[in-house]
Amino acid sequence: MKKVSLSVTLLFIVIGTLNAQVDSTKIRQRKNIIRYNLSGALLFGPDKYLVLGYERVLGKRQSISVNFGATALPKFVSIETDSFSLSKDLKNNGNNFSIDYRFYPRKENKYLAPHGLYLGPYYAFNHFNRENRWEHQNSTTNNNVTTRSVFNIHTVGFQLGYQFIFWKRVALDLVLIGPGLGFYRYKVKFDGTIDEETRAQLIDGLEQLLTQKFPGMNYVLSDEQIDANGVLSTNSVGFRYLIQIGINF
Picture 1 (cartoon, helix red, strand yellow):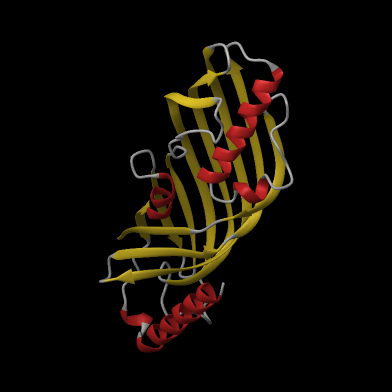
Picture 2 (cartoon, rainbow, N blue to C red; picture 1 turned 120 degrees about the vertical axis):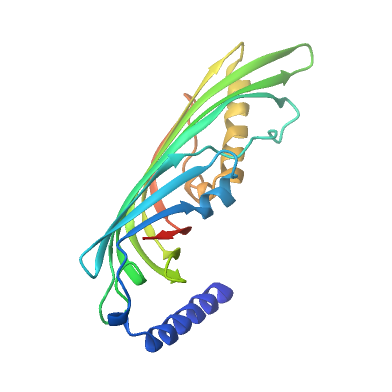
């Protein structure tokens, strides 16, 4: 926590220094940015995550930003139990959409938008589809069980960030603080011969994988669990943190 606080403090010192040295009246305002979401690719893997964004400046101090693209949960390896092992990843895909309004305060910025400190509301939606085949072993037989899961997350909140413009064209966008409220809905179906005890064991294993592979799910699942029907529906604190790089034109 101390390291995070120090990093944020140093960032604002740098921002203040740069603001003091620049006369925004001499800089041409370029009102469009096309960018790529780096943070999502780092968390979920670049092979399955491709989310692009577009920001359009509205006047001197406001903008609207939209992101959309393909995404997927990280690859599952195995469940921490002797009874199940992952046989095959059959399907792993999804999509991401988000929109936010940004206000660049005059008192905090000598730059014109989209360069500088900004704040404003956001909405984000993530949808994931997973289909996995598991090999179930017991004392007498081995058989396969297929799980088909759908995971939807809606998040609304408020964000604070800073966007750098380097060499008049290269944009580096950092959402530093993005608290919100998340609405989580997870549902899994089972194909194959499976009794109630084995089903419960597999559900516990899927919970383990979600907490390991999806940031923040350990907090969401600390009070809620996937029920016996394979459903989780809950609300919890959400958070948004982004690193994006793009071209300003």
